[in-house]
Length: 270
Image: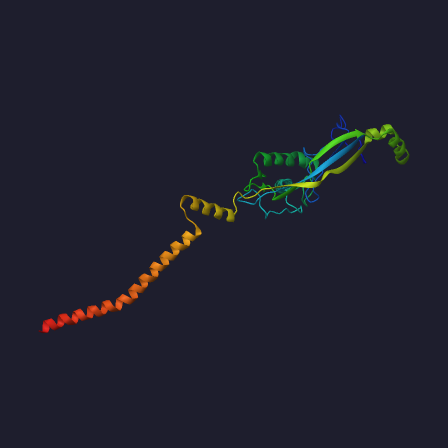
């Protein structure tokens, strides 16, 4: 059970607009992301969250868009969201000399005046000039080579029931109306005891490429491994016999030349 209080507000004039909480189910090795991706549970409700385990494996460049050598300074495992947070933290700390409390880092925390005068314009400039880009291999934060997600489906029931309210009122010393306006009960479980892996593979591996080339040559040229060996054997045999012919014939040719020169000399003497 999680207790929510209406005093915690971002808008003093209206109070807390929503009565409930926002929660995220994520891998313990990556930072949680609440901006638009959180799950919401209203106060006085029992939320049943059934999650699934999805794992995505992306090939490294040039077959895919991931870079296995990338590491983050403040997170154990590389993720696109963690990389974006650290990238923004780097630019803001250089420009403003401080860090917002939501960004990772070891710098001084920005006060309200610094946040208004420097941090907000810096974030706007980072997004406008795309200083922290995502997606492709050449971007600041490419996609991770491995990513784990836990998509969830939610269903709700009223909390607490009348009997549960009687029991909890003695334990918490609060009445049923207070509990229905301030308590939330969240139950998280797996939808099934299995997981799904989506793996990006190369269109052609080295062995498949050689097989494809050999198959095309055999289909259109009638070439095969035996044909290649026969061609090599033919070239080698011709080279061998040519060398043997030259080696055996050169002495006889030189001797015939000598005999011809002697014969000419004898005729001249006569």
